[in-house]
Length: 187
Image 1 (tube, helix red, strand yellow):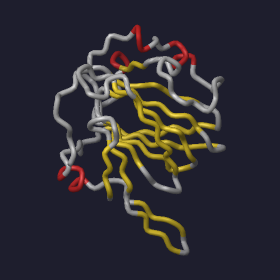
Image 2: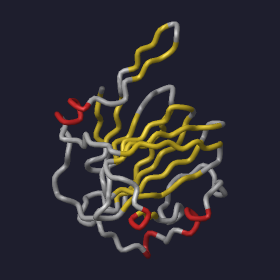
Image 3: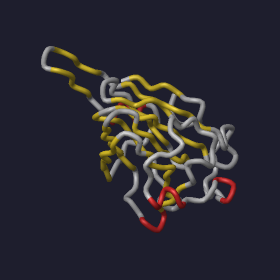
């Protein structure tokens, strides 16, 4: 399992070991010892997945304090354009974003600390994205910012959206409750 820093402090791309043979591929998605050694969250009390068709955009989502959470996301079917936006006041990357391609074929993952908005756009015919989160879902703390409020390079300006995602506020109208803690987790 290889961890790679991104331009957003505390956010990592992770390349797990892929074991390939004539039967297919076996992917080990989590090792608590590797996460603990790198000072990353190891407690994920809730896991879920979404199934989406091509052209669907989900996001940009997060939970606010005191129910904020770390996410570990990966694609087990298909391919997505995955994005994060740093909403942590005081972060050297505040307001900046990163774009990644997650695919079942690569088995790659993203480790997303609290205070980052997350979303994705499905580029394959269908995609299944798995989310591991460090706190339970809390409807009253579940929030988002509008997908167009950051100049992200979305491949489609008319994606398939939920009504909720289309109604999120512009980032300029969002007063962030997140603060950067000054240190970066992970080596």
